[in-house]
Image (cartoon, rainbow, N blue to C red):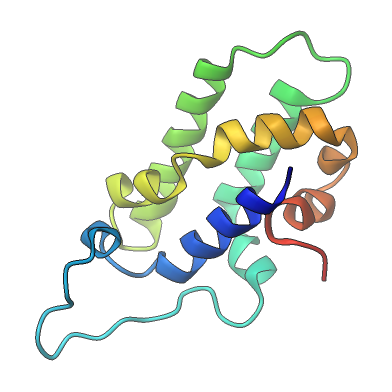
Length: 132
């Protein structure tokens, strides 16, 4: 089932610029503002070194013909990428990992349900955010 991943990714992309506390319902500081780092096209937001590395990791771990994955190891490698991504965006590694924490196991399920989701970076992003 892809819908939860789409919702999780949409929520991530919408919240990516906010500090991790935003997910806990704390009001923004007086005079503060939020920014949309995603823009109007989520694919553009995902088209960066870290998401390409996550795609490569996913193919290497979950692609056709691969042995049964060590999901915990895959998840930890993904978290390292997510932390680096968060640091690169200035939101902090822990905050980005927290926002993306469910994604690795959801990608495991997507790859199991639809092995073609890993055929290319484009099919991978379609599986993550929906088709164009």
